[in-house]
Length: 263
Image (cartoon, rainbow, N blue to C red; front, side, top):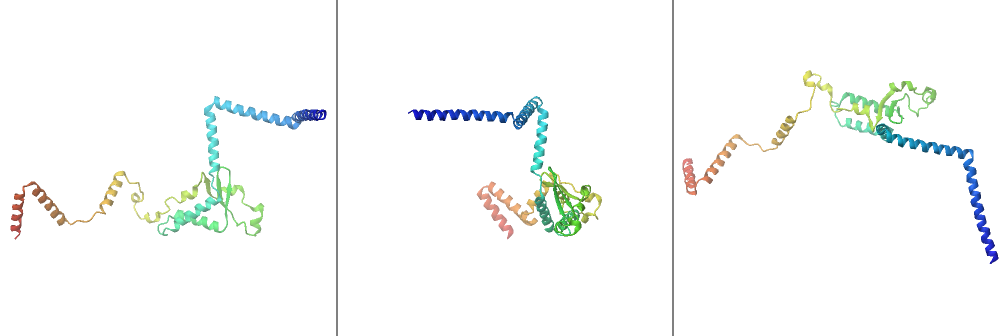
C-alpha cells in the first residue's frame, strides 16, 4: 500500500511540475521578441476591425459606398473573360458569318472577324490579364518561331505600343469590340447606297403597323372565295332566314313558285 501511495504521489508531483513547466514556457514565449511582435500585430488588427465597425455604424452612407465599390470590383474580377472565352466567341461569330451569303454580310463585321481568324491561325494573338479586365493584342511573331527577333526578350512588344496593337477588351464577361463589330452582321450596307437618303434610314415599326401586319398574315391563311360564290351564299342565307320566319305552308308555296319560274 505504501508503494502504491508513493507512486501516486510521484505521478501527481510530475503533473504539477509539467504544468508549471508549460506555464513557464508559455510565459517565456510570450515575452520573447516574436511573441511581443505577434501580440502587437493581433492587437493592431483587433483595433482596426473595431474602428471599421464603429465607422460603418457612424457613417452608413460612406460604408455602403465602399462596400459597393468592393463588390463591383469582386464581380468584375470574377466575370473577367479569359483567352479561351475569346477563342470561343471568335469561333461562334465566324460560324455565324459563314452561314450567310457573301452578298448580305456586313463588310465591317466580315473584315474584322477574318483578320482576327488570320492572326489566330498565325499564332500572333496574345492575351493579358489586368485584374479587373483582359486585353487581346497582336504580336509580330509566333512564340514557337525560332527567329532571334521572336525569342529575344529585349525585342518584345513595349508597353507604349500596346494601345496601338490592342484588338479587344474583355470586361464583365463580354468582349466589347468584337460584339460591337458584330452588330447587324447580316445587313450589307453597300446594297442600300443607291437608295435616297430618306430610304436608307430605317426605324422600328409602330404598334399599329405590327398589328396590321399580323392581321394580314392571319388573313393570308384563309381560303379564297370568288365574288359570285359569295353573293350566292348570301342569297341562300337570306332565303333560309325568311323560310325559318314564315309558316311551313307559305314556305312550301314559295318553293313551288320559285321552281316553276325556273322551269
